Length: 135
Image (cartoon, rainbow, N blue to C red; front, side):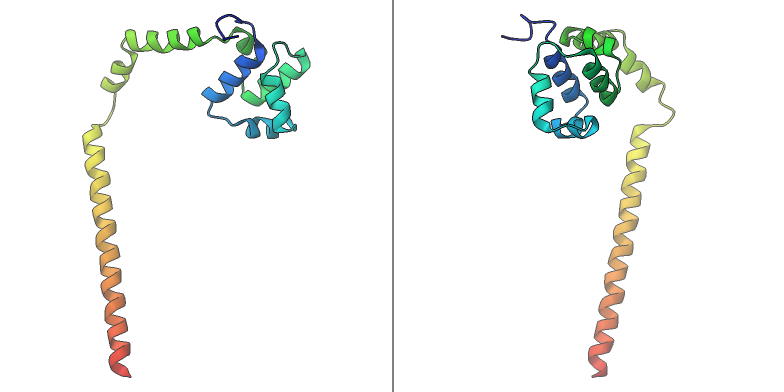
């Protein structure tokens, strides 16, 4: 059955939260002190014991309530509301530096690094030529 027909499938919610946090099953398993297969079993379970759910919530850095109330729709709505209310644009406009200036600054630093690297290679070549002539 799909997630839409079983909205209270707690294992599926845990799986999606873990994925959204860019966490692998192995990492969650390690945090819980269990095997990856056990995490897989949890994520396939429609219901989980409250104590185990508390441990999972702690490992995910969330509350039990947040896991229970998690829904894909809520996440989508959250990001849509941020976008619709111009929060992204507002943060960009509140920026205290010009991103283009930062890009140029990084480019100049990179150029200086290449120049130092090139000079280092020239110095090394001169040294090697002196060694060869000395023989």
